[in-house]
Image 1 (tube, one colour):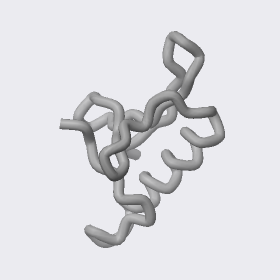
Image 2 (tube, helix red, strand yellow; image 1 turned 180 degrees about the horizontal axis):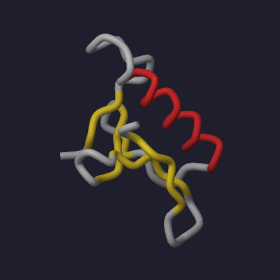
Image 3 (cartoon, helix red, strand yellow; image 1 turned 45 degrees about the vertical axis):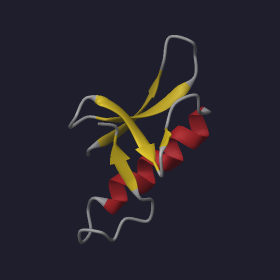
Image 4 (cartoon, helix red, strand yellow; image 1 turned 135 degrees about the horizontal axis):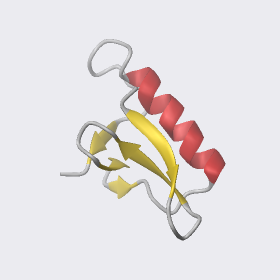
Length: 65
């Protein structure tokens, strides 16, 4: 599991990339300020994408660099 849904100190949710220790992003959008449902759904999709062949992710997630 590379990505995790986490709650921030302001009670918003984010998708966190545990490998690079930063919030994740999708198509230039940093995945912060989400609802819990949004964060959990995106986290599940991202982790499922990393279980398959490279480049076959249902959600094109990348870590913020």
